[in-house]
Amino acid sequence: MAISRTETIERERRWARPAGIAAILVAPLFILSLYLEGSSAALGEVLPTEQYRVVDEDSAQLLPAYIAQGVALALSALPLVYLFRAAQARSPRVSPAMLGFAFIGPLLYAAALILTNLARTGVASDFVAQADAGGDIYSMLEDLGGDSTILTIGSTLFLPAALGMVVAMVYICLQAQRAGLLTRFFGSLGMALGVLLLLINPRFSLLVLSIWFGWLGFLILDRTPRGRPPAWAAGEAIPWPRPGEEPAATPGAEAANGTVEADASEILPVPGSTSRDNSARRERARKRKRKRRR
Image (cartoon, rainbow, N blue to C red; front, side, top):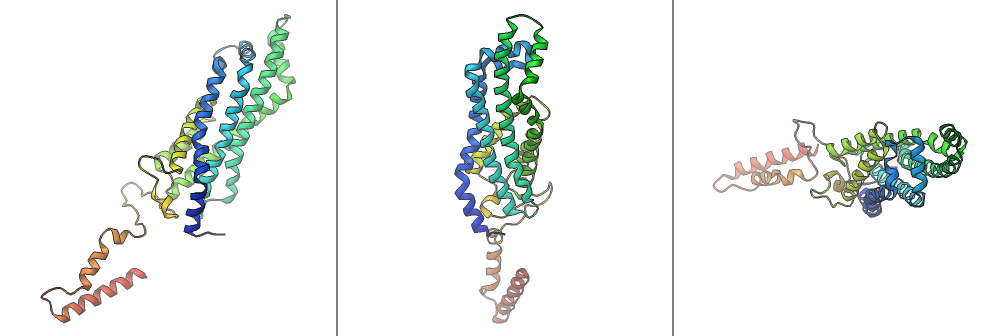
């Protein structure tokens, strides 16, 4: 059911604070998780057997790091839902079925990260204990990883989780940009960062994406230096003009650009003119107004 512009603005005002704060918290939580990971943050630079030794050494502080990552990703769902609903209220092109990706992407990615990292901690503990007894450590590590059901589930979830996150970022940013809620640069940046989750190191792409969410939070709270795009306050879509086009007229623009004053000058009598001339001016002004109403 369609809602009025007043209802749209009121709903967004009511939810702006929780959605904005959740978005702002994404970046510090993810940065905190990287700090807590410590030396294990560089696991990609060493052999797999050494990776698990490092994980076992840092296991005491890795649990809060993984929880911080999961909470940060889960919190990102709230601003994505907020942005989706704002675009949906302004554009009939937004499909309601796509709202599910705003939940599926962040929550599934959070679950995949937590399950995988927790399972690796357990595998690392078993590997270090058995490696000290001797034997083929590479075969041992492979067997331990294959026997871990949680590690298998977490690893399997990563691809659909990343795809869900990509779809959420690309679709929601695109529709919000078309409705005039995000600038072309900021909307395009959000789409690009979503795609990067599939192309580069997830740690780096999630870090940059968390900073994007931080700025989105300030935008939702209307705390950015240049303020929010006019579509937020209008409660309706105000698409960005294409290169070379004039900006679309907004409600009240005629009064602001002097049209009212021009009409008034034609309606009011001009000193020194005859009554017949003044009547003709008033009649032309009335005809012009009727055409605009049509």
